[in-house]
Image 1 (cartoon, helix red, strand yellow):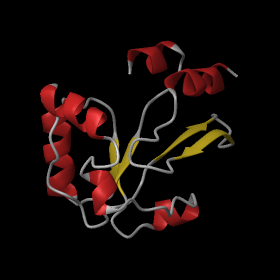
Image 2: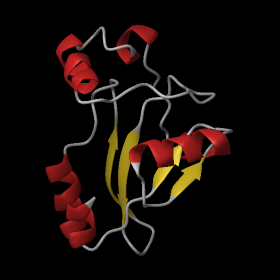
Image 3: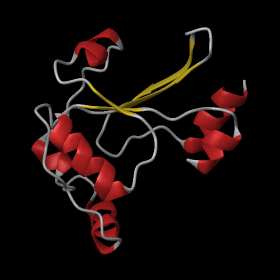
Image 4: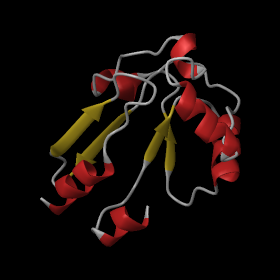
Length: 123
């Protein structure tokens, strides 16, 4: 978060759950940036974020070492939203509304590399 803000950008999350789920997520993770809701998948469809993970992937079976590290670090699976299998994506959008970077996760662990995101912000 600090690296992103230092680069002059603002982080915004878009979630798949309802307000109660978002409030719990914000409280559990001490989130201090905007969290928007996309219950009907309109934003996901517009951004072409349509991939879904299997239960096997989401439970960590495809990456047992990663699951163990996260569990030992105190991470837990919260209450799922209505589209709990929806994979994520990361976009960097410039002030003129142009998407300058897009990364759509192909797996539950396939998040955008931070260095790529920061490079896109700098560009």
